Length: 155
Image 1 (cartoon, rainbow, N blue to C red):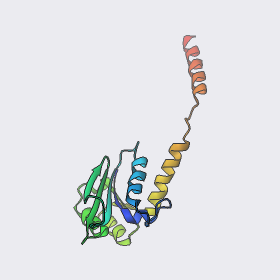
Image 2 (image 1 turned 90 degrees about the horizontal axis):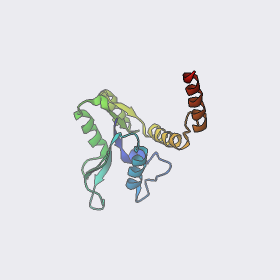
Image 3 (image 1 turned 135 degrees about the horizontal axis):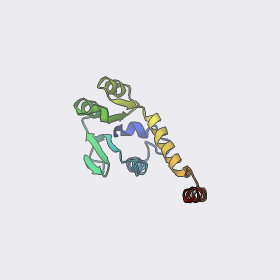
Image 4 (image 1 turned 30 degrees about the vertical axis):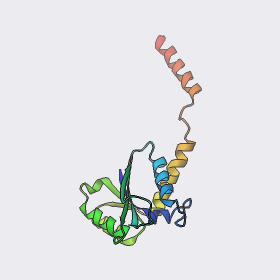
């Protein structure tokens, strides 16, 4: 799946990253990289207004994450609205934002839209599930049943 993310909007909904944090962009990128290790989704992170104090390039690609800092004269919301109108194969994209206009225009353009709070819960649950996931069958139990199966086949 391809995700278009209203980045500062998502950061504002996170419990583990603050908008006041000077490394908030790096932390969001790291969070999504960790989430995406096994999934291989593609993320387009749209941040508001690149200015001379922003230490990042306007656009850069890191593996499965494209990072966009809009021009100082364009908000992330405006960029996202322009992007969703021009996308080919809209069914392959999901927009992440709690902004009402973005949600409305996404749906109008036949894109799936998930609010930032729900997306954060989703990635948090995925992380917890991967950390606590146990094999369905323990190794000893598997060995036992393989042994039993082999005994029956030999008879």
